[in-house]
Image (cartoon, rainbow, N blue to C red; front, side, top):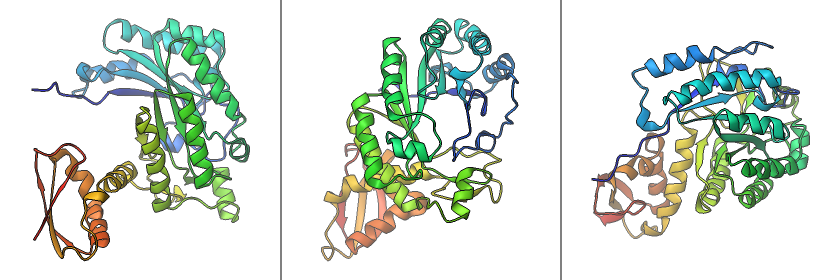
Length: 344
């Protein structure tokens, strides 16, 4: 039997807004993480990690990692940054975790900080690039240029870190063509992984004020799905896995009225993956008028992608073919991504 694959286990430690030089127009990390941003406070690293390893869901076969999320980790005061890493590294040396990952800005890396991260077991650094277009970055109050991202990737590679890039389609000044160009520039950097987070309008942000004043138009769900699907296909066809699509929900973010506008959907990543899957099987579907009722066979693991969120995938197939889908059945003789159609 083939060896079972386990999803990586990430134990997050949140430091919302800490180390950030200013507030970006879209950012509201307290609501996104459901953790308060307290200047100068330090998370209880040992307590968080002890609780994690005592949890019933902790599984070393999933190669657990500690992750410092939120804020700008490499712009924390140097000794605070070292202290956080040192506390986490104790658990790496004890064998509970296989490494540490941090997220940061592309203009917040220098040799001293890169060196201390290497010393204390950091294996992956995720860069909040958001866009590779300087005009979009300016309008979003990012405070860095696209060249900072390219330079950061080169520096991280020199030190042997795995590199992730976070991208945010739909920012002010962005467009489908502009984000297509951003994806092209990211492909040239050859990161190890990417995340796609379409911009949302969250209450209390500058983006919310612009939206309410009519100075910003967010993406709709369908538009965002198409843009992310195209980018995801291009990235993954070039060997860059997209490890997250869509913002992860949190209790505070899901409170009524916190997300004012934008392409929010609890299963956004699933919508994108289903969209990609349906595009990949288009050539195997009957043309309009060729059938009135069809039965679809697919590998068991592909069936959720085929059906889509609340069977929306099947409805799209019916609209494209003009045929009613009478049933979907598993067929393990088919290769992943392949289907078989029977006309009824």
